[in-house]
Image (cartoon, rainbow, N blue to C red):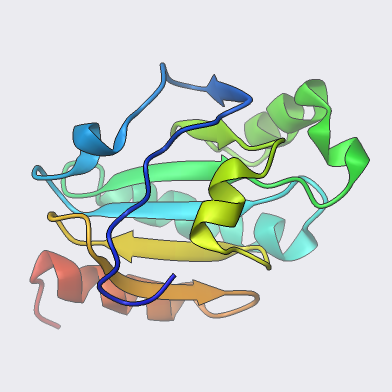
Length: 149
């Protein structure tokens, strides 16, 4: 995705965990949204999760956060494994399980972890992927929220 592009519809989930289905219209207008992609087979995702969970908890009233589980291999599609990994890593936010890679393709996501930050109008303000710093993501969230440092 490119900066200023509109958030895609959140269609095509194999299953939603921790939530009923969420739609783009549920996110637009009220507060910014962070959509992050992860996979059970991604060690970098697991290392980043505590920092992401801290952001989720700190900004709970100011930011929507949606997790997207993107399988990288056939074994990653095991729902039991996805549930277990989500529990082990404290992923309590809504999880869009994307076994068909519908949202993954819509976002053009190739690597995990990947983070997409949208403003209240649903326009992409920041994206990053791979082992990029959670600290950088945090600075972008603060900027979108209008926090001064």
